[in-house]
Amino acid sequence: MNNKKMMAGLLVCSIAFSILPGSVLGEEGAAWEQTNSTEAFSEGTVSWNEQEGETAGSVQGPDGETEQQPGQPEFTGAQTEAGSWEQVWIQEENYQEYGPEEGHGPGRDEYERGEFFEEEYVGETDITGSVSKLTDKVYSIEDFEIQGKEEAAEAFNLPSYTDLYAAMTLEVPEILQNPELPTGCESVALTMALRYEGFDIGKTTIAEDFLIYNRESDNVATGYVGDPFSEEGAGCFAPAIAATALGFFEDQGADYTAYDITDSDFEELLGYVAKGTPVIVWTTMYMAEPEFTREDSEYNGHVYRWYRQEHCVVLSGYDLNQNTVQINDPLEGIVTRDMDEFAHIYNQTGKNAVVLKSVEQVMSAVSAGSDTQNTEVGLW
Image (cartoon, rainbow, N blue to C red; front, side, top):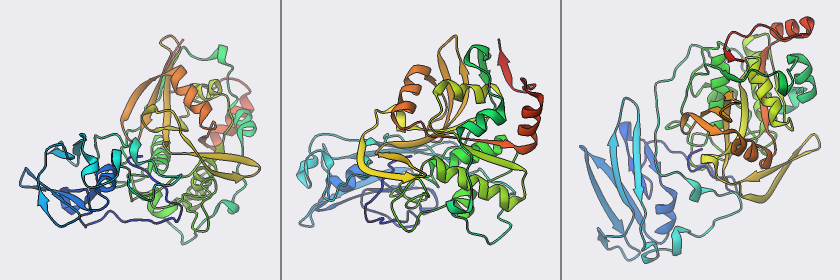
């Protein structure tokens, strides 16, 4: 979740159609904020504009002087393939000229994670779909009785670790969260899982019409806190996404269900993949070590610890011989991770995970009491 932040006061900023301090004016006038530049020059401003393929930049100091200075953040940009925008910010030594040392401006709180922003921006804009909201119902997490890991393990008739295929790959569609949803990795991960199940849903439809938001508190377990369309958005954990999926299925009249399988052992996640079901998993941006804050949330007796690099992806494959997993990452695309490293972060960050399944398929698996035929690519 690119430059994803949560503000204690829940200040939600729009990213649309205005040039922000420390921002790049890209295609169709959209503005993208680079947090370190904004904070570094907290007493002044720095703005960059892409004009006719050339880069124009200036630094506005606290006394109003404007000059291009070596050693200040520099922007190099290029329009890439259709709908994509790549930004590279080069950060050198004299941030302290107009702001606090190391680019940390005033007001940094326990939720803010701007320093973990990977300084390469890649996005896409062409993911659309035919699914739209059919009712005016606005759901909350209280509307649903969310089934947990025990019910899911029984319903899916999970294989034991020793009975897994040696390798499995699910063809989960690749969707990148940027540029529309810089802090919307959770809704994009759910969208990828839904598209895998055959729902023709657009990239932003969940965030626009179905995502359960928490407008009353900072509880990220019960709903998304902030605005996923803004770089100032925060996030949510597994119960909120499971409830969002259930609300989507109810609105669409779809005979599907969602399970919050939080606290499942990592080997169990591989079992779902072996059964042909991708797993929505919480991890960190760019596999960073999590940095926990003092902001915790609680739901149904479970405590969810917030961490600054909170991120949500889809587990879509594994290879036991290579000790790797395949991940659909809303920030980086389809990537391969070391299995032990990925499992380590999954365990550290609270074992948050969600799975979806057709009720008919679940009932068939339970009735059969044995492995069902898998239509994906599995190797013994």
